[in-house]
Image 1 (cartoon, rainbow, N blue to C red):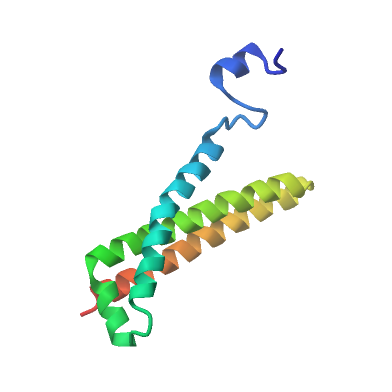
Image 2: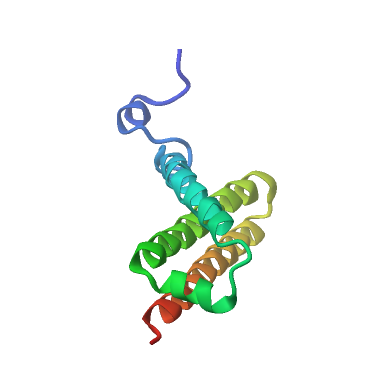
Length: 126
């Protein structure tokens, strides 16, 4: 026995009418983060003790800059989705919940853009 309406079962939508999209996106960003974080840890271990010039030269390589930008984007997207779930679960005042989610999304997007811009600035500086 299901508590969902027939239309809800067909469409796959929950009470928020978002369905599994949010859940699925968070799982996909988590899957993307696994190899990217492993790559970063290995690279940091390889470059441990390197001076500033060596790290800048490493970051200028497209095979480094591209995964770094992907890591930044996936990290902030995943984090924003996770914080949204926490806010939805624990903030019960509607206006505060909406404002908190909007602020969280703005902060995550802003930090992702700042991080990507920083990597690209180093990658394209000559």
